[in-house]
Length: 399
Image (cartoon, rainbow, N blue to C red; front, top):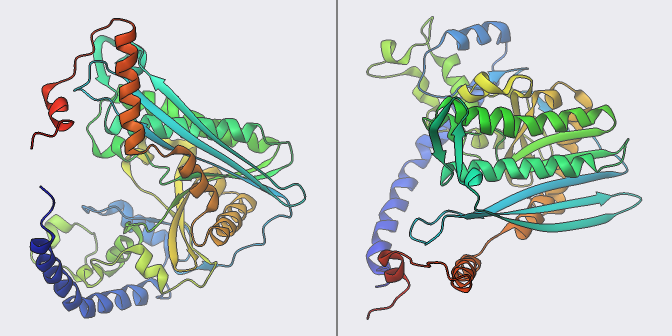
């Protein structure tokens, strides 16, 4: 039975009315946030100590420079290359007769200047071996974790980074290159989900961070900046920093001090992108901030994640870079200039990421064809090809 849109339409109208009623209050909070970030006389060292001593339930950005600083974009080099990877996957389906998954990585390299060129690739890979389907604990032979769902998403991201490092290594010595990933450089599921330590060691130390090491070492012979681009970010790390500034208590402890009302609620509900929409001019980036997420603090080391907000047309994007990019003014400027250049070429979104996505995408029809090929191959080899009754029911029309 199709969705009853007539019944839903009245609920949508009610939702819209509630949103309209809250616009005036939201505007007041946004103005208060802007006034707070623009205050003079904020001592960054004292603020850092206040953050370290605080106890909050929300993630707070770490300040690096004046909170309301704005940076104009430097000009891009005459010759440069932008490389990017993106991925899609077909997850394990427990209702099928065999356990396997597929990761498809789209890879794009775009060169500009005296020798323009473009290379676009789609790289599908099937995983079905025992060592692909589980992550084993080296210290306990019988302890293992199945690779599916969020873990498969992380493994796909590691594959994207691995291939990006390989592309960067192929760039000629002395070249200027931006290596771009779609989304965050922080493996959030490893923080939000309760995975055991051996999973984090495998996916972070021997996986994602290993490939960041490879990318960093390439700077010995070329200029290479790595960045993660987050379109329409929902983060509130910087606004949460303003909440600490607004707190009247000597030590910020929300559970102990604020059981009824909080002064910092004057900016509650405002997102970072809304704040920087009012602060940044076209092409400018915000001040640098550090991520204080637990997974970064515990594991990332010299790849600690910094971020800034960038205005490209109507878009306020969050751009994340590892510490070795943030600490090098030339690399940070290269990341700023080339991300902005890509956004302008792509009508507000980096064209290299758009093309990588197109190479990586796996459609619903692709998924059905994939499983048909798997089942046909099983039949050809005279292997059992049973599927669950639930799977058969979904593919059969009864009425």
